[in-house]
Length: 322
Image 1: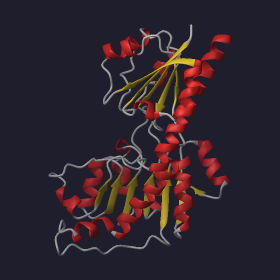
Image 2: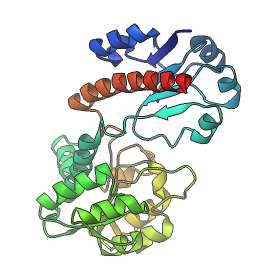
Image 3: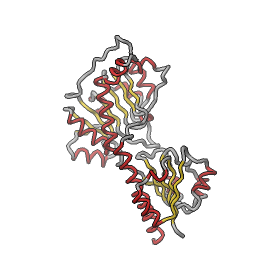
Image 4: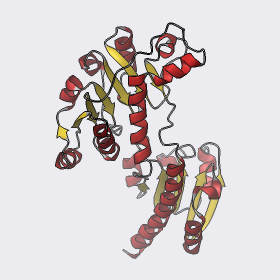
């Protein structure tokens, strides 16, 4: 029986370059389904009936559980247009013989550059200066900032994004210190010349702590209340990962107590009313999960998405031969 590929996304055939679509259709019955949200379990059963490969985005990813996977016996691979996959139960997929593929490299440069932008914004207070120029900040609001050159940048998580941030942070004249619980990543960073230390030492020594770690559903948050208290007084904390990596309540307390100079996160974590003081004073910068949203990333992501589908078909074919 011929393989069947189902692509669930908001963009339909625009999710994958035309040349890749031609190659996929040569090898498999291919269906593009335009969705604005994830299908219900009943819808997912109908949409994915007979599918060998599901290619989808996080927005359109169905709820993956035993009940659904049991009704999709031909499913062999899920290609997720994303880097992080902590929300997917890979053990469950493995039990059902389903491989998960992601796009780990498609947004590396953009996310690292976004982390740098967050650091610069907190240091220069450029975001607050813009608010003040538009009449959205009190006239007496201070725009006084600091220079990053000569300060210490501590990077927690020295994978692709953290390593690239280290390079561009060093280009600003910052001293760079890294930590990672993954021994292979830590060893590779050390071989490239990065000074490595424990996470607690990074927190104690850094003027700017950049959290570039991935999220593990089985591990606790990285910056808990104790580590927030251990941050150097006047430090900046930048979270380019998931909000759950940081104890937001502890950060709010530290900001209001003046122990932490600023917090930036690529998400929305504060209430506009309850935390209006921190937002209006520019001590919190939230960028609504926009780090990856770049022209080059979208083009690169579409290309890698199509190639990953083709690779999934290769793997499915090898599995049948084996």
